[in-house]
Length: 92
Image: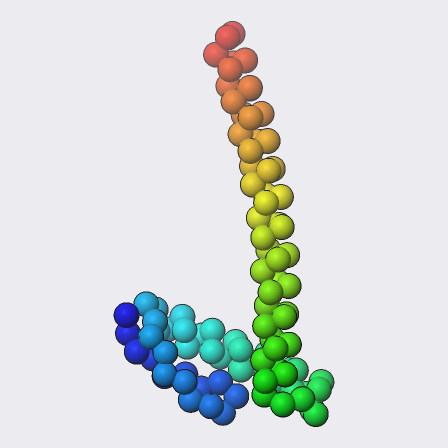
């Protein structure tokens, strides 16, 4: 693991990461989200802004998890259909 220094909302954090470039990108994304929320909610402090970012990200994760399950079900159904078609072709 490598050490990487990131800046989030003007604060410096030293983190350990397997992929420093990815960690820097994530920090940049968080900074962007914080800046967007700060524009909407100028009166909120850093902690509350971070809480909002966290809630938004958890909602995205929940939506992606649901979508992943739906796609897995679709893929399973397609594989069963393909297996059935292949079985029918082999019987010919």
